[in-house]
Image (tube, rainbow, N blue to C red; front, side):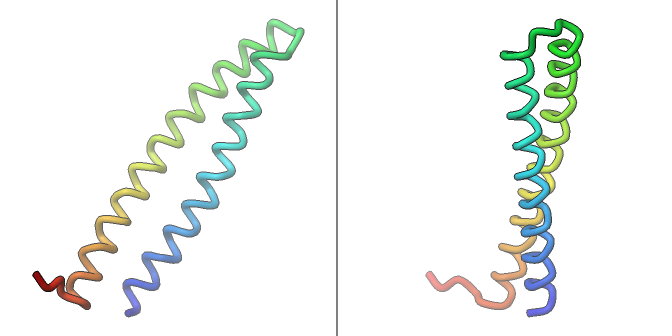
Length: 81
């Protein structure tokens, strides 16, 4: 159960990071829509693009850990057909 618990902890940590990134993406979107400063709007667009790449990588990592967790759980609790 140690490996399973470690994977779950890592998923929780990554989910917290996901929530923070998602919040920052939302803020960048608001800055694009509501800022009166064209330079800030441009920075917000670049920030959003960079953050979207980060969140994509993070989600890929989360899916990989979920897949590994499923494999570990199958070893511990075989699926009966």
